[in-house]
Length: 382
Image (cartoon, rainbow, N blue to C red; front, side, top):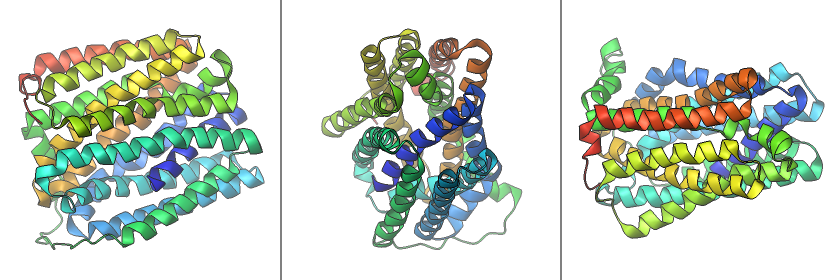
C-alpha cells in the first residue's frame, strides 16, 4: 500500500507536469512508451534473475533504484530542468519496474499457502486499490496546493524507501534452484509454458488487449483540463475513481469466495469495461465521468484477480519468475503501450475519438477471445 500510494501520486504528477509543459497529447503517450521499453527489452532477463536469485533481494534492489529515479524527478522539477531529463528518470523507473514486478509476483506464492492464494490475491488487491484510490487524490491536492509536482516526487521516493525497509522484515526462505547454464531455451521457458496453457494465455491476452485499447488513464489530464474543466484537484479524483470501484469489488470478492464461473465472469467484466469506457469518452459531465470510471475499475478488478490467480496457481514455482516476467510484459503492454496508442490517436483524431474507439476495440477483443478459447469461456471455479 505504501509503495503503490507513492507510485500513483507520482503518476498524476507526471501527467500534469508533462501536459502543463508541452500541451501535447503525444507527449502523454511518450510517458508510457519510455517506461514500457525496458520491460520489453529486459523481460526475459528479469524473469531468469527472479527465478535464479533471492526474490526478496531482487525486489528490494529494484525498489531502491526506483526511489533514486523519483529523487531525480524531484530535483529536475525543483530546478525546472530539461524535459529530456524527466524522460531519462522515467526510463530508469521503467527499468526498475521490469525487475520488481515479476519479483513481487513470484514472491507472493512463497509466503501464502496455495489453498488460500485466491482469497489472498483479493485482499492484496484491496490494499493495492485503496492506495490507488487515495494516491491520485492526494497527488492532485498537493499539486494544486503547492502549484508544483516536486513534493509529490519526493513523497514517492520516501514511500519506496519505507517499502524496502518493511519488506526486509518479511520472513522469506530462498530455495536455491538448480543453476542450469543460461541459454535461449532456459530464458524462453516461461514463454513456452504460457503458449501451451490455453487458459493462462487467453486470460493474459484478454487483459492485455482489453486494457491497452480501453485505457483512458493516459488522457485524463486532457479530460480534466479541457473537457470537464475540473483542474488538478478534479484530475486527482478522476484518477482515483477506478480504484474506488476496484476496491469495492475486491472486498466483495474476498468475502464471497472463489468464483464458480471464472471464465464467463472475466469475459463479461472486460465487455462491461469497454462499454464504460465508451460512455466516459462521450460524457461531458464530471459526475457521470466519475461513475463510469468507478464501474470501469470494478470490472478491471475482476479481470486482475482471475488472471493473477490463474497465472500463479497453474505455474510451477521454479518457473514463476519467468512466467511472471512475461505476465508483467503483458501488463506493461496494456498500460504503457496503451498510453502510447491513446496519445497518438488523440493527437491525430482527438481525445474523445481515442477513448470511444478504444472502448469499441475492447468489446471486440472480448468477443474474439470468447470465440477462440472455449477453454477460458467454460472455465469453472477459480
